[in-house]
Image (cartoon, rainbow, N blue to C red):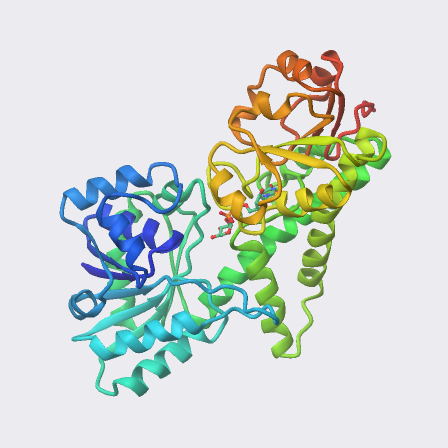
Length: 439
Ligand code: UDX
């Protein structure tokens, strides 16, 4: 199969590299000349474990190419995937579809022979209809079918998620398009991934509903964590206790500082807006958004109350800045409102992140950065763990305590065990696990 991938962001680059690895001929297209030039030099613009090797192997094998010009790759493609960004529109929270529609018009101008055009970006229900209308308007003789094929991969685990998905959703009623997409994904049938064919609007809805449900699950356990702290229960055990019921499931029940990232905040917001456009109030999703925003802002207060007084003039060490481990992505990271809140309280902040510091400097220019977690802790009055990078789990707790001026640790990801922290003499606070919770 010949595939053109329009947009080399997270989803486009990972999907393009994985499709090439399946044996397809893939050309990734992006308007950003700097990005394409870097990719042609073998430099990967994002941090994603394993992606550099996957790209290099498939480029070497001649299956993966990069260009800024979509003309030739679209003309020869059996399938053209649109994987451009759909950011939140400034002001109203709707998804900004201008990049998707621009791509559709450009595809229409150069498409040749039967071609399936597929939206892989997360797009509001009905976008596929508009993409089809735009293509037919721009090129009435184009022989195209428009399908929706949402991507469910997670950053940090993107390649594994792409190659071993729980399911693949293909939204189109066109039989020729179903056949093309069935052929593209055939290698995954070896991994027993079910290929689910639906209507286009249903596929678009599945993606939003999945993200909103997962965001709800996280927010639910976060609220249960708050209550657990008050009543002396342990939220990790509560999560396991409820999660072992198959109807609930143990995943996505880790209480923390609130969800962030490039998808959940943006997609839940967009879903609420789509619903309002149709006079529907998604009250649960609206509440999830409000609760999550408040939660992120409340984390700075949690630090000052663990310290037991004003943080004015005090130094707080922050471990982990990215929205989750194994990525350098800072989009909607809980560290941003936390650090901002600490600065507003008059604290000085010194931060460490294994890979995210370059990105973080753009968002948080007014803090100090440290290349080493122990140096970050040196002389600090309190330490906060915001992202659960594996290397923080393995820190030498005795050494950490000796570095700190005051042994206050606020663990927003529950990476340490309260009994270990107590044994080392820390004043320790975590999420949903009061130190005295025994009963
Ligand atoms: C998410 C979806 O999982 C993925 O299917 C979709 O395609 C894109 O959005 P991603 O944003 O990469 O993926 O990260 P994910 O691992 O889902 O985490 C999102 C946020 O939720 C992070 O801030 C994470 O820390 C938080 N989270 C996740 C929790 O706080 N608790 C959990 O139990 C799980």
